[in-house]
Length: 283
Image 1: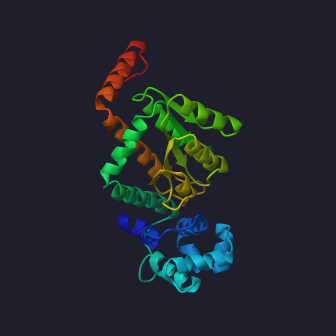
Image 2: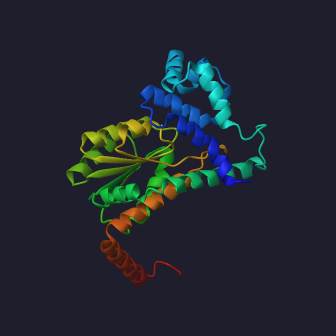
């Protein structure tokens, strides 16, 4: 099977929104269309409204904003865009193989986005310059934040993981800003904890530049981030697959290293000397 074919329907749906200024409510509808894929192309306007948590008139206005006469016309277009082939059939294997192939498609789409190296390089410079560097990830995003921070701490002098919500989260954001932080890296993944979005608002209020790794260009993080870096989440299994967001996190860490190569080399050499002295590793 051609892995590119897996990603194409999602890309075609995302193209519907390219260059269109959407309201927050319309972004919720757009995200719903992307997240639920071919299924949503066979739902009524009322069903889409319920799924997205908006009103039915909002769905109709959304369709018009995209240049259609109404929702039925948009639904016909969605059916065309999400069809896998002339007869809608695919040769994807069993459901486990399909889940992995979808991840291959997600990674392939991410690779295409990384053609713009300047944007990633500039984001790396912004994060590298932030001392300290707070890294936010709540609930399902917490492991990604911890994984990124584990390696980032080898090349950055002060990485602070924010993986607990509650009233202390705002305190820790304000403390980071007071200590000199200029940016926040946030992992914003489904089901989008309310506390995460509240924290993004607080971070911007504290003067931090918010860089968000999220699952879609129309995710709820869009209106709260200064830099949005999308990487699709796999939804074919019981629990989400975060393959592409993790890959993007490591690409961003590479950009941080590239922003200060001399400091990076010095810190890595210091760590290796310390690890050897303490005999941390077997190999």
